[in-house]
Length: 54
Image 1 (tube, rainbow, N blue to C red):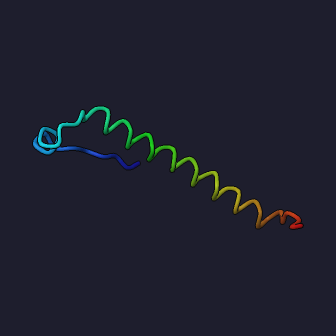
Image 2 (cartoon, rainbow, N blue to C red; image 1 turned 180 degrees about the horizontal axis):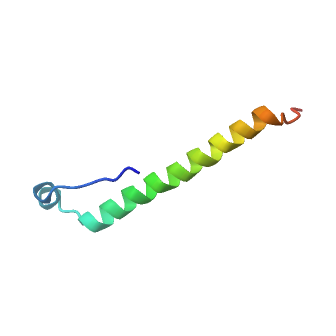
């Protein structure tokens, strides 16, 4: 799993809340991981069971 980290001096210079930033970025990483996993499973299944294309 990937995570983001923020150094203290960087956060104080740009004036943002580290906890909110880290939570938001990690949430996006988790959402993308689930989307990619779901997409890969669909691709694998479609190779085994071809779906008709109209």
